[in-house]
Image 1 (spheres, rainbow, N blue to C red):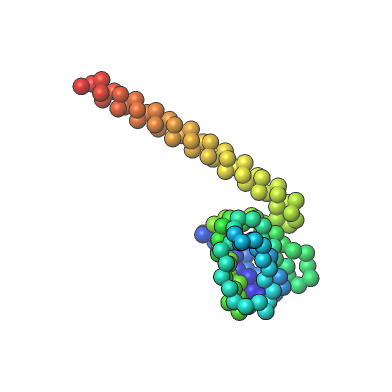
Image 2 (cartoon, rainbow, N blue to C red):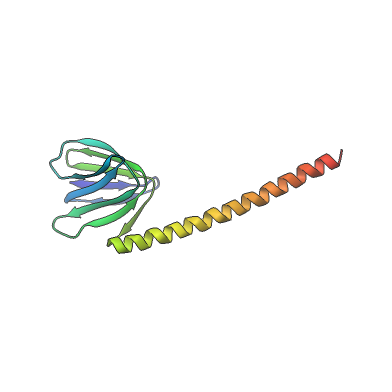
Length: 130
């Protein structure tokens, strides 16, 4: 199979000779082999793995997305994805990403709080100026 992984801003991976893909949908885990019928599946956030030949599987943590299989072509489009050489490495990468997103969220909430405070102070100043 020919696997192409798309993110909103880039092509994450393009891999030839994929012998097996395992992904998760909202109904559970499923696998794709080269001669499986064509299909479309909504992917749930989770772990996606693919195998090239007899090598060890490659792992990706993915956000929600869509998988389309037409003949030997498999197209996967997801919002976010993180690669890992092993499940342990993938776990570490995901945890690092969550920490970075959490820090960004806290900084954003603090900035919004400052803007709200400034807005309320200006409204209060307008009311007292009447």
